[in-house]
Length: 435
Image (spheres, rainbow, N blue to C red):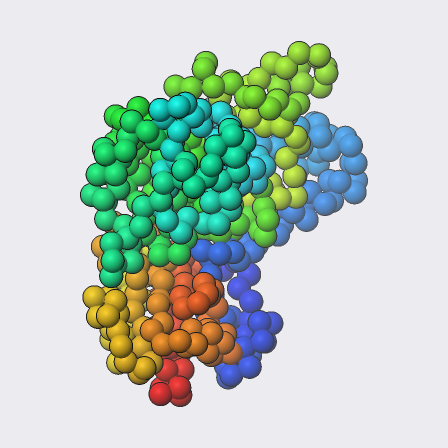
């Protein structure tokens, strides 16, 4: 397993994050929260500083050839588009760097969700990320429909924590004639389950459904081949595994098969043909493909932060070598967690009656069904916050999902086997202190 590129990132120290119980206050913390917010890459820091300098020394002229670093703002996204295309497995005309995750989801649903009297349902996983749930419901309302009748959610079987592939496929086969849109998370934010994107997409389309994906927790985490899988559309954010900074600019994908039939409904000048964009013609002439959906100028500072991180991905060889490393890291963390005297298998957790402090891992054990994230479910009421606070005091940064889950994600770009060992050892220490 190759050495991580941790030297390319600024990992906070124990002192900076308030890890008061760690003896090495000036050492880097154990940062296992890249699934929520990736750390700052040093290259992103440099590029943002360069754009600030360009702004201060060129002002409006920075949009064009006088940009001091050769990244004129009018064409800035041209540096990002090929990297986006490579990381999601798409053609360059199929991707756009634009907007925010939920805004892009609404744009895509407005184009692809076309309910009729017979075909009107939206199929998704139960406990989809709340912003997606809000979007689904509001799209139903916008079409004069009742979300309770429109949004069809699939839940895990009783006593289970993740969805079975066959249950998804059976639902599509059974309900397909009434489903207008199938839309799942590529990787489920809560459980960490990686859904079989290719298989679900094919099954949905065989029933006449459109199939789209929210890749917020998948992009930069697992290998993707959106074009070859014939995915209709996809959206993603860039502040998680892509490390582009809090609230950073997002991404959008539209398969090239739709370039003639699904043109942008809500036109904006940045989606206009760049050859004549600054001529300000009265009639909108969209860029072919996904980039025609752009509306306003992209945030250059946010785009610069994204570009810096994507350059690190490129240097690492993009997703295949990172995936190989990810499998080793996540597998190691899982093995160490299972060696804990407080660990119980998921089948026991489902019927757990004891008040003894304990936890299980609800993320699928099969590496083909998960990315870097492991979701730990704590089995006693009120236990999770105490564990989370204890880990934070020792410098292990994961994130909590109330009431009882902590997510830990050893991201292969910057995490190491030592991080996995530290997290497992400190978790055991905290359990011992509570027991």
